[in-house]
Length: 404
Image 1 (tube, rainbow, N blue to C red):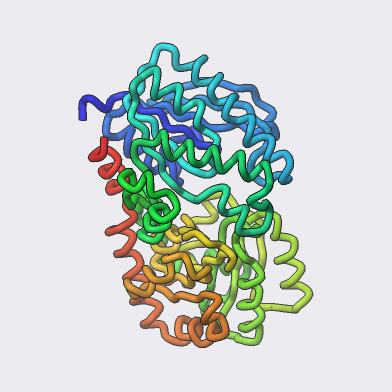
Image 2 (spheres, helix red, strand yellow):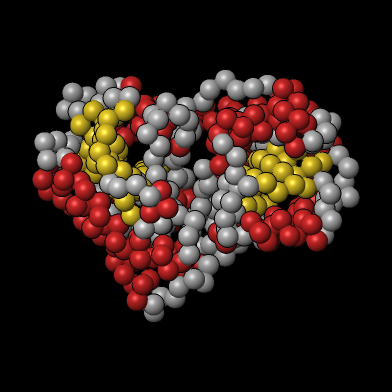
């Protein structure tokens, strides 16, 4: 343990500098800090923030915030250019601010894959060990959605970057068994680097269901006696929102259920217009809310919804699952046939698997959660136990340290 002293974490997602604040990466980084590692966090500061590149220390953690173009929730052209440039921007900032640091471990995540140059620099300069947290498989995702073709030069550029990233990684933590199997089939040269190390959080004691229901009634006027289904997170092409909208329409006349959709993205206007046009009075769309309110909303909901486009040919494993399990919510998984998320839910009796093959049975599969309170309660508890066993941040931390 003494040898692993200085750690640098590099992400293309803006990591909030309040390490005590809850979040997928914050929870893992806090675990490293709490185990007495010296931590440096590198993440982008998109141009919409109107701030320069900066270095600062907060709560015992070094932060390097690097000014970039907008790479999240922006148009495809700016995202593409920004993603290409970011490799050089990160390299320049890391050279500038870490002259007096020698890192033992460099930790990083996808998406996307344009981190080769800064990773190569740190590994060569410091003889650091590298660990990739593989959150999605890019650029295969944009290929599946028809946004690029294999002949496209942009696709070929990112495919080369992807292969380079895998090659430079000493270890690669995958989201699930299906993820590992996919990587072995498509990248056999790295099969010995792979292990399962999924998204994880630090579970905490949350608001009880009764108080959550009261909050929902006061905040959104959702009656306390209804079974509330929640979809939350990004609302874009990858989420296959058409499938979710079909579910809403199936239950539009059911007076026992309410569907709440919270999030932002390229498909959010479409979702809101659909609900209004189809007069689905037991559904409500709202844009993102702050974490404080969102935790209370989660506590008042009964069932979590996860939706993915059916065209994906690699196994996605959305992080929103963890919030649902933490709040003892059974999960409805509406995904492609490749993902093993639904299989895991069924195996541990904490959810339902819906794919293209059985989508016509959606109503029959979902209705038991509306009509059977005991099933709702038991599957919710099973899900929470699964979270503690499989998706606890302490386990993720231990896997990384053990490998090092």
